[in-house]
Image (cartoon, rainbow, N blue to C red; front, side, top):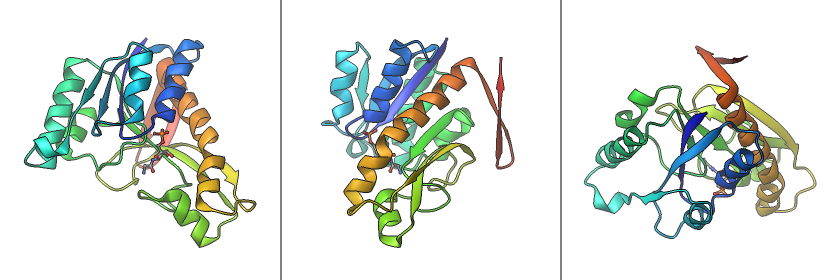
Length: 202
Ligand code: GAR
């Protein structure tokens, strides 16, 4: 049974997919804590409904990003977590947090990396005019969506008329992909060699 921390800034639908994966027996784990950088994040209500403790860590309360990440690291250490999931957490992680959690922090991105990194993956893919996009789950490093890729799912977006449609079409695939990767983490290990990631079941 793995202990998971989720970091989220928004509505928390990917967070929900992990909650559901645990409830439905796919993921052998428990969510120890939700950490959010937004007081009004929808994820907080989902945590409350499911008896998961949530902690708000506001950037304004810290002099620097590094100090903020040191506080998040303290929370993660205190909760003895094995896996940290960024589920719509819209911040770059600093070395203060990355160091001790190397290859234990994963992120979901709404495009096929390395295409369209950043905060507007769905809109950027739409405007570029690609016919196929999708989502990626990857390990987090110091860059913007640059860490080794764990899993990807392709989604045709040539029938979408707006960036919002692209986002809505990709979202359910994000949930499935995220849930699958977290389930795998709970039943085996991902081995990282350079940029390549391989899975081994226990
Ligand atoms: C998701 O689409 C996720 O891929 C994206 O934010 C959304 C969060 O939705 N993340 C990024 O763009 C990270 N660069 P959610 O709060 O409902 O899970």
